[in-house]
Amino acid sequence: MKKRSNLATTIFLLLAFVVTNSLVGCSSKKPVIQYSLSITVEGQGVVEPVEGNHIYSKDTLVALSATADTANGWVFSKWNGPNGAEVRDNKVLMNMDKSITAVFVKSQYNVNITVTPDDAGRVDAELLTAVQSVEHGETVRLTAVSNTGYIFDHWEGDLTGNNNPQDVLIASEKNITAVFVRVYDLTVNITPDGAGIVQELILSAQGIEHGKTVQLTAVSNTGYHFDHWEGDLTGTRNPDTLVMEADKNVTAVFVMDIYGKVYGANTGNGIESITLRFSDGSSTMTDTLGNWTKKVAYGTTVTPTESSSYYAQVFEPTSIYLNQPSDRINFAFRGYSYVGAFDALGTGVGEFRAPRGITVANNGKIYVSDTANHRIQMYDGNQITVLGSRGSTVGKFLGPMGIAIDNSGNIFVVDSDNHRIQKYNGVSWSIFAGTGSAGSGNGQFSSPNYIAIDSVGNIYVVDAANHRIQKFNSNGAFLRSWGSQGSGEGQFRNPRGVAVDGFNNIYVVDHSNHRIQRFDSEGNLLGILGGFGSGDGQMTNPHSIAVDSSNNVYVGEIGNNRRIQEFSSNGNFVRKWGSHGDEIGQFNLVMDIAVDNDGNIFIIDSKNDLLNFRIQLFAAID
Image 1 (spheres, rainbow, N blue to C red):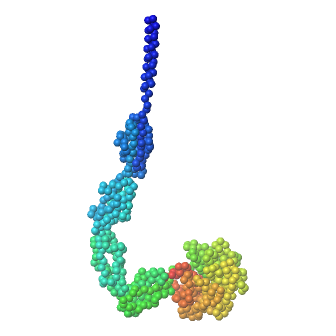
Image 2 (image 1 turned 90 degrees about the vertical axis):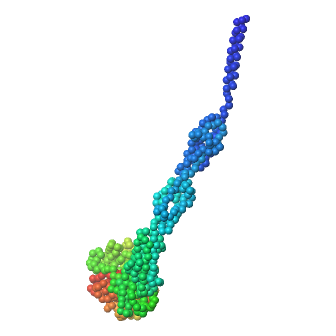
Image 3 (image 1 turned 90 degrees about the horizontal axis):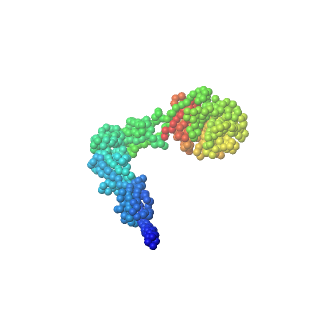
C-alpha cells in the first residue's frame, strides 16, 4: 500500500508541473502597442519619411531627414508642429501619437550698398529692411540720387552699367557701389542780345562731368554772323570745344552780316567753290559745306556765278536784292561735275571703234554698241562681257547702233546694216523684227538706227532711210508706223535718236530739220522743240536724245553748236553745256546720250574721223 501511494504522489506532481507550465505560457502573450506619426511640409523641400501618416510600434525611434529645394533658394529651418520640440538629432521617439512639420524657408541675403565719393549722393532701394536683407528671388529696385554738384555715372561690383533706376534679382549676397562724378556748370552768353544761339553737344549746359569735352556751335539769327568767342573760350573757330575742369563762362560774339548757302536743288547738299558777286564790286565764295558770308552794305544785289568745276549750271533764283534785316540768302543749284572719260581705241575687250549707242540698265550695267567692231560690250563693275561678232546670222551684227532694255531685262539691239532688230534674253539671241534686208513694208527697215521702249513694253524704232517711226508690241508684232520724208509736222528728214518719257510720249530727233518732235504713243503730234539756230532752245543737226526719271529731255547736237541742251517736260529750255573741242566738257559729234537712275549722264563723243571717240561721264550735282 505504501508503494502505490508513492507512485500516485509522483504522478500528481508531474501533472501539476505540466499544468502549471502551460498556464504560465498562456499568460505571457500580451497585445502590441502602436502609434501614428503625421508628417507635413511647410515651404519647398522633401522629407523622409515622406509627407503623410505613418504607423510605428511603441518606443520606435524614427530617423527623420529634410532636404530643401536649394535650386529655388529654400533652406531647412526646423521641425515644428505639436510635437516638433520632441525631435532630437533628427529623430523622434514613438511613445504616443505625434504630429510634426518640416519647415523650409527662403534664403536671406544681404545687399550691401556703398556710394563713391562718399558725399556724392545716395541709393534708394525698394524692399530692403534695416539690416539690408532680402529673400532669394526678390527683385530690388535701386535708384541712385545725386547730391548737388554730382551726377550718377555707373554701377560697380555685382551690378554694372549705367541704367538708373536699375532692378536687381537677388539670388546671392550682393555688394554694389554707385559711382558718381563731379559736374560743372557752363554759362553761355550771347552778344548782342538776339543775335544768335549757341548749341551744345549735350542736352543741357548745366551739370557737365569733370573732364568732359563740350562742343559749342554758334548759330546766328537773321542779319548776323558769328565772329568770335570770349571768356573761358577764345578764338573764331566754330564749332569749338571746351574741356570742363571747373565752372565755365563763355560768350559768343555775333556781328551784323549777310550770309547764305548754295545747295543742291534736290539733295540740299552744300555746293562748294561757287563765287557770289555783289553789285558793289565785292565777292565771296562758298566753303566746303556750301555756306558763304560777307560783310557788305545792305541795298546791294548778290548773284552766284558759274564755276569752272561744274557744267550746265543753273541757279534759282538767279540773283537777290539784299534788304535789312534779311533772311538767309540761299540759292538752289543744279549742275554736273566731270567724272572721267573712256577712249580706248582697238578691237580687244574693253576697246572700241566708232561706238554709236549706249544705255544704262536699272541695275547699273552699261551697254555700248561697239559699232565698227560689230559687237556689244557690257560693263558690270570691273567685269566686261562681249556679246556678238561680225556677221548676218542670229547673234551677229553689222554696224549695231541703238540699244534698249525692257523691264524684264531683255536687250534689244538695232542691227543697222542687217536692217533688223535683235533681242537677247540673257541666254540666247533671236530676231525681234526685220527681215535682214532693206525694205519699206510694215515691219521692214532700211538702215534703222535707234530704239526706245515704253513702260508697257512697246518698242519704237527709228527707220532712218524710210524717214519714219515703227511701233511693235513686246512680242515683235507690228502695231503702226508714222512719218514720211519732208519738213512738215509729223514728217522727218533723216531721223536719228528716239526716247520715251514717263508718260509714254515719244521724242524723235528730226536731224536734218533741226528739231525734236514729240508724239503720243499712237503717233499723234504733241509739240516741237528746237528749230534751226544757235540760241537757247535752237538746234543745228541734233543727233541724240535721252529722258531722265524726272522727264527732263537731253539733246546732243553735231552741227555748229556741238553741245548738250536740257529741256523740261513741258518743252521749255533749262540749260546747256559744251562747245566744239577736245577739252573736258567739250564735244565733237555727240552720237548718243544715256541717263542712269541717279541722273548721271553718259555721252558718246565721236571724233571728226568718226572712228576715234571718247565716252564722257558727268555726275549730277543737285
